[in-house]
Length: 224
Image (cartoon, rainbow, N blue to C red; front, side, top):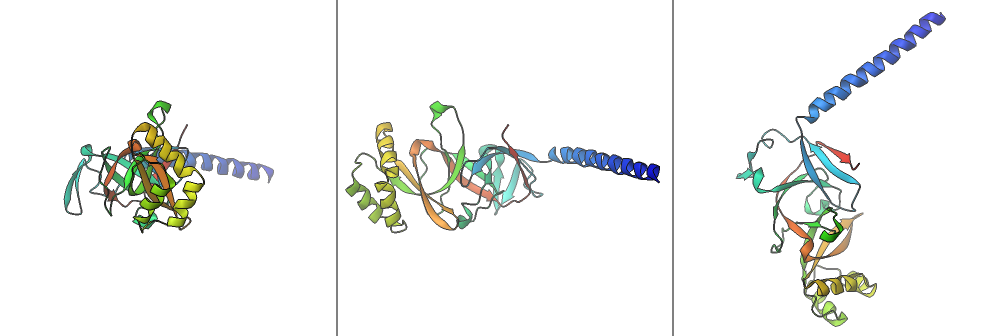
């Protein structure tokens, strides 16, 4: 009886490791069919690096048709969205966005920007996805001017913006932009269904989103 139990245990162990090896090998083979893309955070920056994406048939080729338009991938930088803070604007985690590199893009109602949130001198590259509201001219950093600018944008939560200024978050960013000689990009995001605002020097803009491919077939790979 003991011998039978031992043999059974050995067979179970062999089956487990054999199956695990086969599944792992199949997964590695599947990865060859996927495409690796950079990640852009929709929310807090995470320790992520890249993602393997399996796109639906028709999107895998270098050129494809999206919403009646012919798209050539080589003309854009593709990112995979990591996070849920852009759901309000129809962008889900795992979606693929195609971005044109543009340092000073115009803002309209449908604009979505990708930002490199770290200064170049730090040698770090971390991308964030943001819905821009408008640019703020930082030549005058007085509270009165900021209040007047907020009043011109009824889509903003005025009380929240004034509070951020009083807490020095916005004032510090304005001072930074004044020193750099650029404008401040004010953008909107959501967290736990509440609106939040981000403030970045306009020279952190990488580009604007031109196309979106909804996608949930993604494997996100952690940084090493």
